[in-house]
Length: 242
Image 1 (spheres, rainbow, N blue to C red):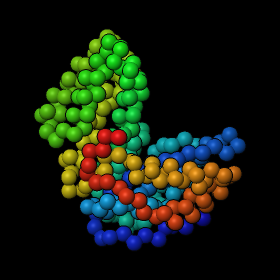
Image 2: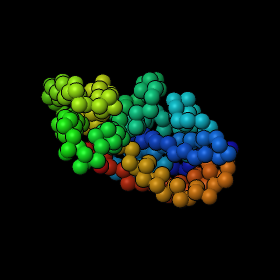
Image 3: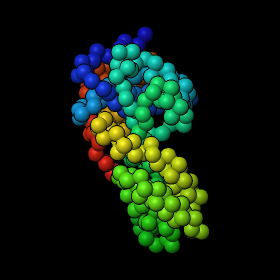
C-alpha cells in the first residue's frame, strides 16, 4: 500500500511538473510516474507520492498517477508541465488544466535530428536556420510573429536536403506551438518551460534505486528517497534553453 507524502504547501494555485523513470525486472518493464507541485510564484517544487505501473509510459499510467493526487491539491492545480506524452493533452483537458510542453525535450530531439555541430556545418541543409527560427518561436510572445515563424519553418523544412526526421520534428512543433508557449500566454502562473526539476531528481534517484531487485523494492526505495528529499528548486517562467 502506497503511503501518501506529507506536504506543507503554501496556499494558492499550483503547477504540476511530471516525468517518468523506468526499470526492467525479469524482462518486464516498469514505469515510475513522478510528480512535483510548484506553487505559483515560488521557485520550490514538492514531490508527490510516486506511482508504479508495469508496461510502457502512457496515458493510462498517468491517469492512474494523477488520480492519486489528494483532491484538495488537485483543485488548486492550474497547469501541467510535461514532455508531451501521446494522449496527455486530452487527459489534462478533462481535468481543466493548461498544458506546457517541455522545451528541453524538443531541443534535444532537434539536435539529434541535426547531428553533431561539425556535421551541421558541413552538410548542405537548412538546419541552422531551422534551429534559429525554433529558438525565436519558443521565446516569441507575439502571435503574429509566431505565425510568420511557423510559415518560415515549414518553408525551410521543405528543402530537399531536409531529412524526414527533421521535417517531422518541425511539423510537430508547428502543430503544437501554442502549447510550447503557454508560459508566455499565462505569465501569472510562472510556468517552468522544462521538466528539469523532476529529471534532476531522477538523476539522484537512479543511484538510490540502482540495487533494487523487484518492483516492490524499487517503489519502497523511491518513496523513502523522495521523503528524505521532498523539495527541489524549480525555475519559474524563465526561457530555459538547455
